[in-house]
Amino acid sequence: MRARILMTAAVLLQFLVAPAFAANKDVVDGPLLDGGVVRPAEHQARASVPATFSHDKAIRQIPQINPGEYFIPPQIQDIPTSKYGQMVEQGRRIFTDTQRYAGRYVGNGLNCSSCHLQEGRKAYASPMWAAYPMYPQFRNKTRSVMTFEERLQDCFKYSMNGIAPTLDSPEIKALSAYAHWLSKGAPINQELPGRGFARLSKPRDPNSINGEKLYRENCAICHGVDGQGQKFAKRAGYMFPPLWGRNSFNRAAGMSTIKDCAQFTKANMPLGKGWTLTDMDAWDICTYIWIQDRPSDPRFGWLMNAIMPPVGGN
Amino acid sequence: MLVLGMLLFAVAGCKHGSGDKPLITEGERLATKGEGAVPACASCHGEKGEGNGAAGFPRLAGLNKDYLAKQLQDMAREKPPEGVVMEPVARDYSKTPRVNSDLTAFSPGLRHSPVMSPLARGLSEQQINAVSAYYASLSFTAKPLPADFQTLERGADLALRGKPEYGLPACISCHAPNGEGFGADFPPLAGQPPKYLIDQIDKWQTGERDNDPLALMKAVANQLTDADKINVAAYFANRTLVVKGQ
Image (tube, rainbow over all chains, first blue to last red; front, side, top):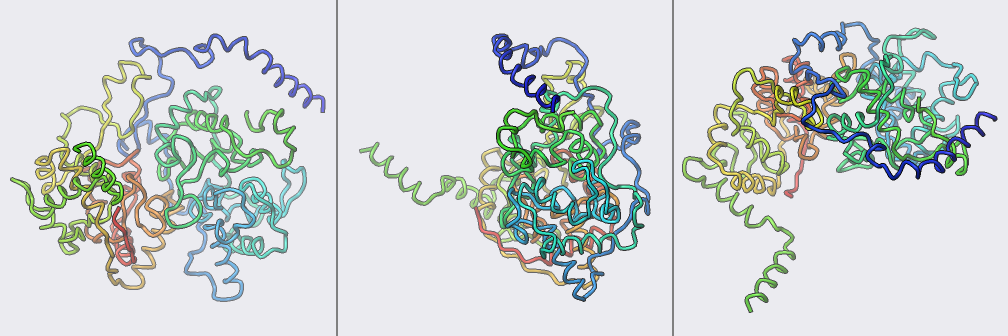
């Protein structure tokens, strides 16, 4: 409680002190850059991979994926034609087109597969086959042991910025059935390679100014310079999901923290070119994304949201 | 009187809702009759821009205008001199040290074709815009090609899910859910002759085509096997597609 009061005081103090710096605007925005001055680059020029695949650095950076390294979930053709199979199919529909099949629980423009890439199969994009066998599990966020179904509810509340379906709702049942089917043959309660996100090093403190530059170079082509993504032409929802703004995940979502975002970005973005950004690039880009506006944390009222510093900044 | 007439003309133009009308007319003339050394586009790409499946000439009808114009510009571009390092990513070089920015050149994109490159060099910028606007204005209805069940099943698996265990994304994640294409950067796959799609992936693998933003497609093409190309091209040729001209 005392920590929270101190933090609030610090934020208020910022507002009081800020006008003193406002006069010297160049210093606040960072120094003016002079093209004639030779100075160390803010980010390393990288070989584009695999355009120059022989580049030593690139080879070191990109992990060679060997067959059998990651768990392979069953094929879509192998869904049984039983009641269970129908439930799995419904779960897959909800997973890939949440806007249509579970739209009443969703408050933004995302689908499950916006982050859990390739229908929840992609390693290091929180694949379902690695998540499902790990539940029930203790979760630091709620300080309690959670079942998989309760975890799905949290996805709806935070990442989808919506309301949680009840535990006995057909949506939760279908999504559980789909995750259950995807993890067919996976060991129970054992961490599989590719679970969750990638692990990153952090050589220096991240820099949102560098992050903005990197964002415009690497991300803006799909997610837009304004971060609002691009909508499907013929159906509801986003083909390239919005990264901030009111159609994106809210402040309490895991992806809104710099750490989770960077770990996801490193392994998966730009799409099809995972592991080509350096660790520091991923941190920088996500710091730039983190400082943008997004829906508030539903666990707090508007006052706390207004005065609390957003979580996940470090 | 003259002013009034011009106003009326402007209003009439607005009513029809096509400011590109003269551009499209010029493009149509170029596409159907050709000009000078440049033969008619229709002689290879079909009467209505529907392409030629047997020869692998792509469909042009209903494609994005900016995409078509960029392809023609890239085909017309000369190869850079040997030893120049080309990067596929447009960087803000005003923000990097001069030493680095002098040594590295941003590649606007190269797409070499023994047939098309000389023809594209014969077109002016105005003609490129005109012919792109004309083909973008055409409507198109695909004729789905039959294929055997296993090929389609494997093609669908790659098109809808990619190869997650190898980090290869699904085709539909950029080329839109039905392969109908998305914006100026992601061209349609449905309604294209399978031979054309396979040829293009081959060209990415050999480096003859290198004009995709961020080298995204190059990264994908380099992971595709020959069987993948055949399966996925058959899958997209099997799709139904109706495109309304812009």
